[in-house]
Image 1 (tube, rainbow, N blue to C red):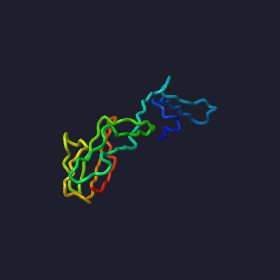
Image 2: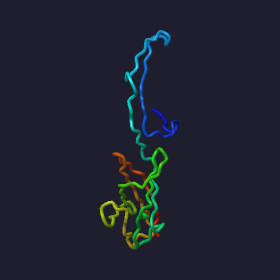
Image 3: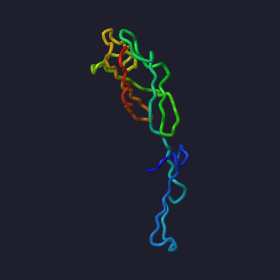
Length: 142
């Protein structure tokens, strides 16, 4: 395992191997591949997700949603991108809360009797063939 930060976050890695039998001075070695190196593209993995919501805090009887285009996905090479695909689920006092619009759209109508209840939101991101759940955002409904 290598820490790619030690190598300046390369986008591509070349690998070759030499095996020595006995002492190096005996010149009994085998190199693979015979010429060049195997090349591998390096794809950074997902590291963290930053979401902003609007309004800043949910209010009973109002719509609560992630702030459009606020999603920032940080990769292990420290680049930040806007995720192309992510979804959210919400629970109000432990019970699932149905979203507004398309499925998992990160937008909910907070019930009028929800004041003081705990709203939890889980976000999942798909990137580079992987899917990661980024934990839970917690809010007390005002």
